[in-house]
Length: 196
Image 1 (cartoon, one colour):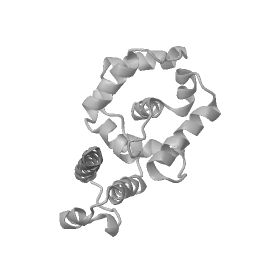
Image 2 (tube, one colour; image 1 turned 120 degrees about the vertical axis):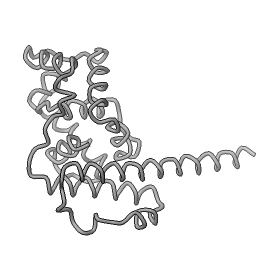
Image 3 (cartoon, one colour; image 1 turned 135 degrees about the vertical axis):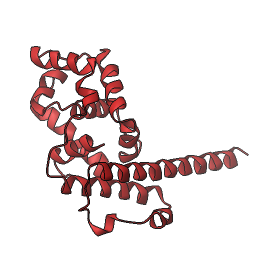
Image 4 (cartoon, helix red, strand yellow; image 1 turned 180 degrees about the vertical axis):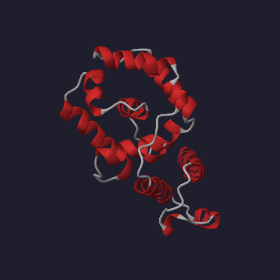
């Protein structure tokens, strides 16, 4: 009985993740439209019927990554920070930390405020990051992504996180590897996070 229940639970979780990935792909399609980006490679222009044929979680995750990478490669201009983030109290407080060179404590309420501002701007931000990392998104990764989404530069991250340049660079590269399963460089992951 326990084995049957375990197998059923695993199947249900797998189906839920596949549904989330399909939803994420739909969101990426909407994002592409909003960016007026019509120059993606032909391979990423699959019809809904083609998407429905993809059944494995890994193939859906790969498709989501390919869509985002295509958008990044075809979007020559840097993505602007959302006005919802720029006008938030969290962003103003973040800028005061940047100006004074203070470290954001691990237990600071600012992390929650930043998350709220980012979610208001991009409701599926954390959800899409979790899908892209295959559910392997740590708190450190997520906070790093929040800072990137808010337009914080690597130099500013050094003082905000109280880490060395090498550590900040390594964390960005590690996040890129979690998303793409290969080293593509820190600029790529920064661009992808800003697109989400």
